[in-house]
Image (tube, rainbow, N blue to C red):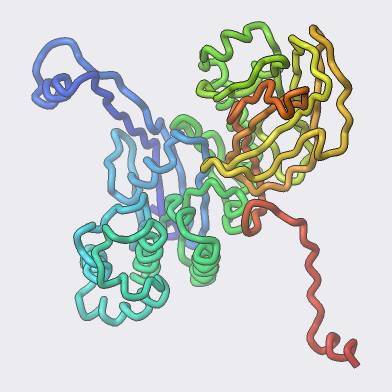
Length: 431
């Protein structure tokens, strides 16, 4: 292998056996004859990759694309079925939460455990201990069993160990998403230091802004196959297309009763409808169709941050409604309502409707949410003789993926304009 190459992956495949029963697993392990009771799943197929020393390379892809499997093979946690992997340099890896740590040991004891596994003596670890504890910043919890740690404390300690054992190659698998934004910022500053020192970084992240900002190259995997490698922007653009394809496949496979009851409608057929949508109301007015429309006019639940997009619904009135109100909300995956509006809040007067009428309601706005996954809820309500009435509500009816090349703190990007004035000029202005 070329001395300038840190990691060489050649035609690597990983096949997992998915057993029908535990008995089938036992029979296969013992090599007993008979019909095989398993099917094969290719987590990786013929993947080749070459990473130079000093490069920072990101790996992106949809869930199940083989990203974590590839990192585990490179670090030696998992063996490949075929192909070859060569590594030139000391690796430090931060894989899934909990990997390599003993939950019964204290934080301090796990630091010694990890250091010993990397070939350091106790005296050498002692010299690094202050730096590790300072970076982790978890206080007296270092003397408690790690099973008592929050996920944030755990990843702080794990990352502190990973970067302080003098690695030549740092491999990180999405673990930083567990920490708070301040710790993530601290870690990315360390990435910058590593790059300046000429060290190699390989990491998996769903945060496309980090891929674009910190990586020299990016690799896109899809269903275990390397789709492409190139500049971060090229890979991110291809990733967006892969996201759309995945959502379309989910939609085709979705045979929920909710969809069956509305067979023949067109808008929602291009979206991944939630099979467990919660719906209720008196059905005097019913939401019979809905869509998310991107800036090109295409129905898609993948929207780029900063783009205009439209949420629209089609409502069939089964009875007369004097004052209909149309609404939508967006929640995060924890169920917290992030934003939303309705025609009444927007001071848009909705005309009375008679039985048999069909109304289309559209909400167009610019996407300012951070990159991530969200859930859309829709509603049609109104006021009658008995006061406020819910005619039809659909909770979490569809997912919305926001793709972003720049995320700020929190849920929204306020679109701040930054201006830096030299301190000397600033003092003159005050005088």
